[in-house]
Image (cartoon, rainbow, N blue to C red; front, side, top):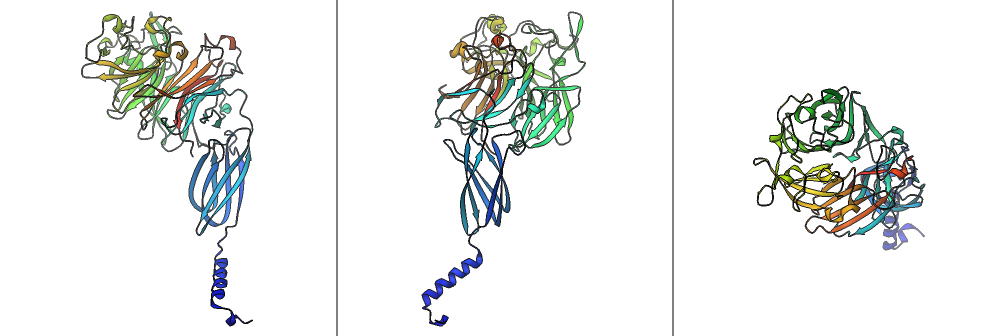
Length: 519
């Protein structure tokens, strides 16, 4: 039969099929995957797609808590990070490839190993997803390592399953605190090294700082991308009882990330009474024990948490603004004790009507039902209303070791009147079962108006553990709570954990955050 005798409708259909075939409506592609491509992030993979047409991709790790990410790359060769694999499982990962004229759906399998045996047992005590902030539960956690710490920040999902972690044991020491910068970089520091990673564990940058400076406890990203860091400086001394004693952890520095250099330093010894030892029972040179920083971009000031002294505000030009602390035995500032009187910088505690509390409350020998100073506190946070939120550990509250509770507490500060008012708290009602003798964290979750609280070192009960609690600010209702029960596998002092917390001899939950698990 000749072509011209074919009916028109059949001819049109054949022609259309020929045209589609010539345009290549199908996608030719191959998929390959590499588990843990940089050897320190075992629940991640790198998927490589080679296609004959430019594509965009969506990756979804299937399971009870699926994790999905989309990548608008429009390329024939795609390198796609996979985050949130389940441990000890043949994971099914759905891949969607979108190209001009069509879409392809495929599924690959990725087998993962068990998490390390020393990881905590995680129990979800309470969860109300409708009232919680979105995201996954990110922990800055460190494991006992026979007198050192082995750091391994991890994320777990709403069922308590670990879905991401970094094995930082290569550093040979504690690397902390874990945080995600504005550009997505994961940043952590050891004593003399700043590490920058991506979520696959790729080391983006490793910066060694001046060996005379030792970083510790806290790093804050400034609006310009530089870093505000707690540091100690070698060969710095304070005068105690007519003796010169070497001090530690009493400086703050700004580190320029782009130029890899220290650009500014504050000396806390210059502005505070270094001889005040009301709460320093450990060693003479650790007079301050700085453990937290906050930066206020409204006036370029710094809030310092000094566990053994109080909360301190410094101006960018290095002048003392105020002190929140029990008002007992404050003398002259200076490393030699020959500076200005610090008493005039102490804020007066007042109630909601602006009336000052009696002397015993001001000095901290007693607490009021509506006001107490923070004792051994951590993690100051400046709230959108300009109030100050902090984790109050409560160690040696009222100068003794008899009243045991930790809490998140919010203070309203009137700088003009030099007063401080307590306006909110959570945790006191839970008593000793929420009492963290060391470490702790608070975060404000703005969209939900919730407070995330980490009480990271709980000794009540048979197993040392930490708790993460999310609280509705308005009602103080717990909308989420998880307990992390530590194993303390590599400890030579397990029996002693509840009393000493000796360095590197117990696991600790330093901080936690609510984050999206994303690249």
